[in-house]
Length: 544
Image 1 (cartoon, rainbow, N blue to C red):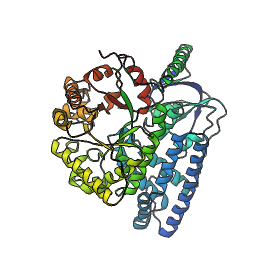
Image 2 (cartoon, one colour):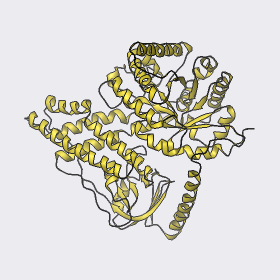
Image 3 (cartoon, rainbow, N blue to C red):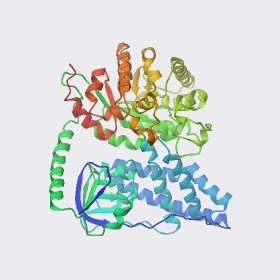
Image 4 (cartoon, rainbow, N blue to C red):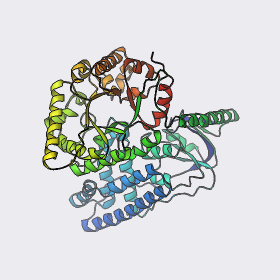
């Protein structure tokens, strides 16, 4: 028996025979130049047409499988293939640098991928895999290395470096038990699809894993721990089968909580909502039975492109989210660009300490046209659902009053243009700086709700850059100072009779749920996959 330590993505157990998948390499190692740009442009156009056809076929298959999450992913890939910024980037490399089409696509891949790789938000960081998938498909089409999918002949675990969402969807799912990857990301769309299909997946198993596995080996995946066993012994198999039996009973128990309220033993109703980064996650939110969406990270509209999203582009995205959630409340956070989320076309000067620099609402107040465009789109979309708007990175009352004034001016402009909007849009603040927490008594008097962004609150309270691994041991999320600031904020919200929630990672930490609720936190927003488990915890707590 050989044991490998990876990272589990889907909490499930899978045992089956190994099917080793070795993919064709579409990497371009060195520049290839062409004397005839027109020919290369025609080749690129032909390849793009074929890639669009293949992606549409994947979308259609996902619809046939009634898998909305998959369909949304392939729809986003289809849109990316048509994106003007992406296409113009490739064409410019062909025309201006005389590159052949393959290398132009590869260079565009590096450019767009790098923009995502350095982001703080793990979901958005993993979007570089989508760019990689799209570009690999284009290169394969250019080289006529058409992507083929193996027909599985037995119940198996697919072992590979990584695979694309398209490859996953095209496998025979009746024989597919799980995946074991040398590389990968828990936030990639491949991982999201595996989770939605309840397929066991372990990633980051290391370079040696794939080289040591051969077809026919027995593979066992513990998705809870990320452990992968090659030719496990009888003792290991017995233990994994025991966990699998318990797993079935656990999920059946959680599913029974759908439709029930998240109420403590003494009757306190707690709202449990979901965090999302793109509209693609709406089906998962619906399936989780969340009470609403407590955080939409609107940065997805601004990243991975060369220009600002138009008002209409933003409007359509917000409309999709609001319509998807029906009457349930949706809190959309205005753009939080800056710090680790660097976007060239914003023209933000390089800063020595960007985490404390020009970011979020500071950019919006310095460049109000950006915010006005976003707010117009948000208010226009507000008639299609139950919208709340949240401003991040607040440090003062003056900032907040300025933002409210901009909201009022946007509404007045829409009114003069006879453009409908809802008069019931709530305005809230992300409390993520010690300054905002300390003056939360003043802020609570001028807004409708608070949501504590504990990830940044911990960073700023403890003076620890959460992107700096050298200070990880000092980044104590359970520090007394952090909980003191949460307690102050919760009390001030209660005194002003406004809701107060948490949308940071601490919200999903069930070891502190009781402590947070006793402080007065009345809503928690977590990844959709954590909603039912958190509901179970809440229903076991007695506050008085």
